[in-house]
Length: 305
Image 1: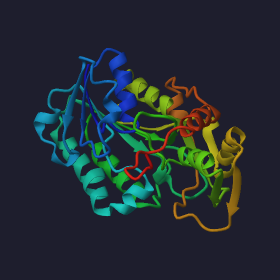
Image 2: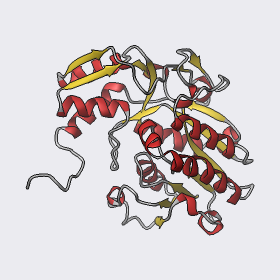
Image 3: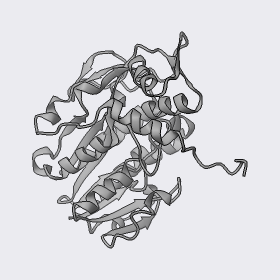
Image 4: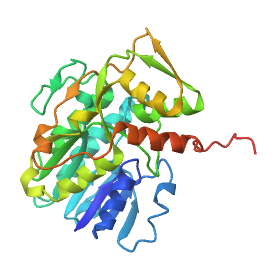
């Protein structure tokens, strides 16, 4: 197939792009490269890869018209980034998504990178029919973007658990990644509201879910699917304990409130009934992250030489 991946140089996008190339697809990445181009260096030599440097807000028909399938991953992702860029969060996560939908023909297939974040803080078990209650600008804009895209005749929304694991374009702000980084570099994790529970998924399993969706387009079209594993619903304290087992760090359980108040358990039955199963464990991810952070630090121009 001819496939477009918006945000293809990002944390999930670059890993997805490699998986699609390995499957023999013709892949085009559209990205503004706000975090640099280095994540793609290992893929540039592949003749099946094309790269378009463009901001998702500037899409025109020429950017999308030649593709069978569009994976829409571009966006401002995560609670901190959206709070720091509230105006851009709406322009990118909502308005640009609407524009993308309007540019597509009826026959093109659209797979959206949605999130479980907007299920809120009820503490309840949530399936795809559960009313959403987003508690952050990130959750609000991602839900609004999802509703815009689902108006397309061949759209699929994948509501992912919080991703963890290693990527050529690392994100340290994701909870498991952040805890492991702090454990290695600071030897300590400080928890806020440690009993709140969320749901997690290894990045390679997330990419497997994207590829699985590509192979089940007709079955899944116009659908919403929670993507994750029942075995990966954890409290923050359980995550910290897994990191401590790998790194020997200290855990401080603070009584202060967390600004990010999400608290829920997710049901994944709808997606797993189609045959998808996550293969990696939390400990698999923590082990590889600890290995990475023992030598990896984000580049700084102020480092001593």
